[in-house]
Length: 145
Image 1 (cartoon, rainbow, N blue to C red):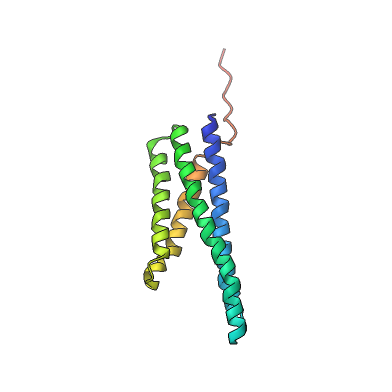
Image 2 (cartoon, rainbow, N blue to C red):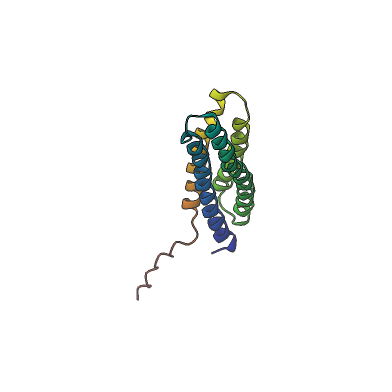
């Protein structure tokens, strides 16, 4: 088994953990605001605290971009079929779209950011699971005599 294929699997698993962290960070930001008491001081403090989680969400999103670029390179090094390499590239294109959706300033359009995230999680999980390099090798039957 190629070291590149094992590295692709490991980086894919890291990507899935990063996606999980993204969901955690944004949920923590939202619930920090939602759970604030209904007065100006508490709401202001909640937004200020939620800013920390939103910042982590943004930073992790940038790191996800690097992770996906590493996966694209590893898919070439692994000599996977073109379909796998192209789908890994599509994952990066979806990340670019994700960034654009987050900064449109149009709430109805920016709402697609969450839907695109689910597509990215599904594609990332598919690529990681489909190309998992740590499966046990199938037993080969002994030759007949």
